[in-house]
Image (cartoon, rainbow, N blue to C red):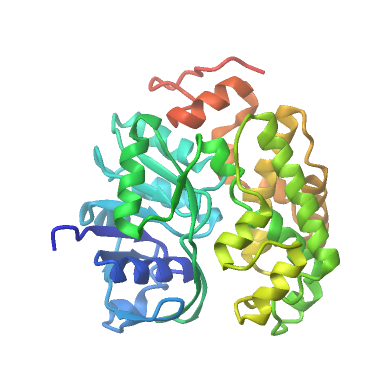
Length: 373
């Protein structure tokens, strides 16, 4: 098939499995790589991958044994795993990515595209990096070979760095996944387009005992009026930061409408409608959930940092980081390997805005290219 592309997916969780099923259904040839090896062990032995729900499919994806194989045997790469695994996977992939090989980050977190871009620039490699504001699918793994896909999103925010490749990045994503993408103005817009951290914060705070007790509970049903109002207040903080940066991002109301296809109303009412339609999702059955361990250090922390830089303090986001740190007995602010590696402290806001378009905070010689704050 002329339009058939070989796409390497770094990851073996629910999003990676669901994305592989979506790619296969669109006529493409996915390969999965589990960094630990455990996530694809059954598939590597010949078992089929089954998807149900919003995608009904059975496929036999190719399996990679290493980052090198994933990069060498595919035309383009898609990173689909929790944000706390992004740096390690980028470190593993960067030595093998070649000129012109497109990398898609699904979904982008903590300016990871800048981190990867600088690794590639240090090798003299020019490879476009496309950042998504959210994932193409939502779902949950039912077993080592079975994923339930809850929804396929109608609209995904994206940008590509360096921005001279923006048209190329959009066309590739449309070719792979269809006409479901909204271009945004750089990585800061994409970072502020990811609503999962703020939404998961409110949901987890309101339902922590359910998570700890391992209960089987409907997430949509338990976005009660009080939880819904908290989500709306968190959204107002994010929108204020975007406004200060002169950026256009979607609202939480647009997010739920476009992702879950329910009429616009209060956030609680929209979630109750999702539940009534059987699309409210199941909440985490453990406190060891990415709703906290990923979204607090890799999502809330960046929003709080941007709020400080633009003079729009995200007080609820910052309070959430402190509350979760107290609950879990750990310092979530110290757990973001990407932000630690990038180190925004030595860079100005204007320099960060420029890097959000070029993908580089430093020049190729490694010297700081931006003025100190």
